[in-house]
Length: 231
Length: 111
Image 1 (spheres, helix red, strand yellow):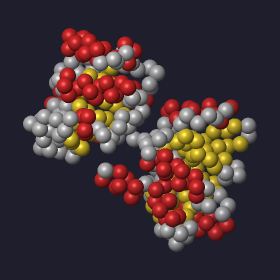
Image 2 (spheres, rainbow over the protein chains, first blue to last red; image 1 turned 120 degrees about the vertical axis):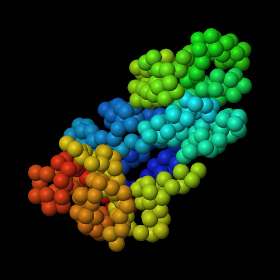
Image 3 (spheres, helix red, strand yellow; image 1 turned 45 degrees about the vertical axis):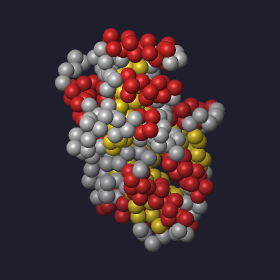
Image 4 (cartoon, rainbow over the protein chains, first blue to last red; image 1 turned 90 degrees about the vertical axis):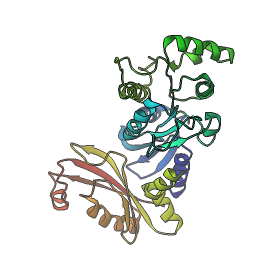
């Protein structure tokens, strides 16, 4: 492995950029390809496919064997609202490999006792997310259904390439949300990206069941982006 | 933030870079294919230095010893090597891949 490529790959990983290390298993030569780098031909297709699946593997192309080691950042889940649902959703999401942060400016909700072992920030989302910008590997889950807390992170998630944006609230609550966001200049197609009512429709009732419905929907959006929409 | 720092400490490729910057000779082993119930997924790394210090895992412990001893040769001559371990294989039996799988490990020097 070329030492420069090792440095380049690690730098990309620190910056949470997806990258593939391609190694020619016949002659040992390697190269690093970043997501979005143009790469033509059969190898290009194979690289696109490992970026999409996140699964590394060996491929044979025109008699040569290549190993494609894909490095994608661990998915993040930013939960807006230190509510009952978040208390169960946060540990469940951690168990499934998400890097979770819970944000709520209401200090009565955002207490360490209620969120043991969870990255919890008792501050406004505008401030709490400064060091943690929303990227393509982030899911934003807004569950306060309080406009002055949820709206800003929702808008910012919709303007970013977050792989999932969901918001809690009845259809009526969501209709009012749509009106507010429209007034703030969010387009119809952007608003259409919000999963609302949040979570898969499994008839969930308790906070834990709702958390399962949300988590399942988020995982679907992460692993099968084409097949999973909202609701 | 502490989470990221902790990950840098245990991530094999980060460790490989650190060792390299310290002037150590480093080899990287990578699982490139698995069959059956392999304990570590494709893409997993084990890094080894010229003194046999190692970090990471390609098999959950069962073939590491063999990979580490092969690494000395790869570091010395710079020629990458493909190693195969499986239950049907005499070597694998000796090194104890008792999990019933088969793995292919690519071993290369950094630099």
